[in-house]
Image 1: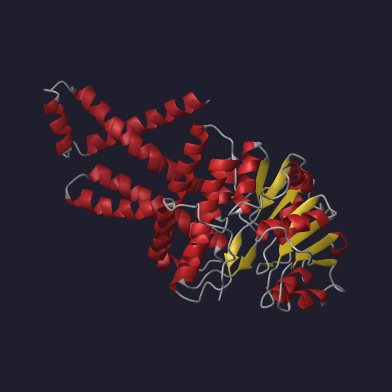
Image 2 (image 1 turned 90 degrees about the horizontal axis):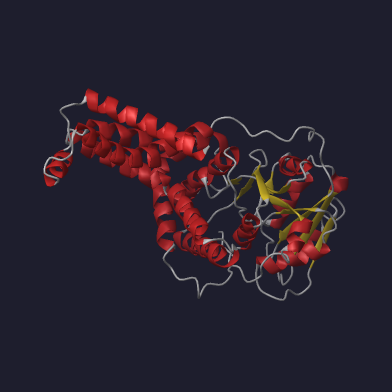
Length: 430
């Protein structure tokens, strides 16, 4: 099937470039003429078309076709397993909350409003080491929620150890993970858990939206970025619809307890326990399903220093997960790194495409100009669709497209930073 797909695409690409060359017969690239001279005129007309095909196939297939598929796949919906309409088994919610008195109350209030059957809901808040009013606030909700507040000392600093303590005290087969600052919507839990009606599914993940998106230019740029990738936005829906593997992103995900226990719980040495767990699931070929209807919201950093520290830990954890946990062959690791880098920086490619389109237009290379315009349109169109689906239609966020690109470039630069001196660190949100 793969060879047939390549053959079909190759035929389409060849036809497109022959047609374009027929439209612009006099716009023959000077560099192609020079190549022909270099080979002493040995490039016949067929050789010329072959040269156009090789150059065009790489450019078109790698960018236009890829982004075109992404754009088309960004429409439509994800369907639930048949017969899962009333599926709401007992679940355990784990919320690590170290000194979270400012936010934990609002988070628990959102769980009070859930439509999930309260009798099937077990909540575990791990407040170990807290010195503020976190424990006292949680205790105020114990008569309205089936809530356990754990304060046992942790063997190691950080969220992974807190999650493992929660796992030991969880009594249900499905575990859901949320941060102390994440607020759910009434139907979030029902949506997130419903796919588990299919026994082959071991984990689900839902989108995260930005609550403080209107604070400043940085938060607006992050909110735009969240609609596509970092908030498990449209890119995850696209991958899920195309049958590709997914990553879990720290909050708003559910997983079977047995699978976690088989892995020995969360890795307490990992910078990002969620990405490490994702790597383990991928290596074990376990199925993760994306649930676009299971939305939550959270606050993001409002200043550059906090943002950069958070993203450095994310990137470090991603690299750590690939290099240490996946146990995959080199080819798979390289492809995963390339894929993440490529899609993470799609907006950057779109900016480069529109700049290049202007240059090609001024130099008379109209067929290359058309290709570059197509690249920009597909990418920007996908981001517009991401805002529609995961940004609550706040199209003004598109005005911060350059901030979004800055965030991507920042993440790219962090790929080259050493992770040896990094350790788990709580992100400071003002």
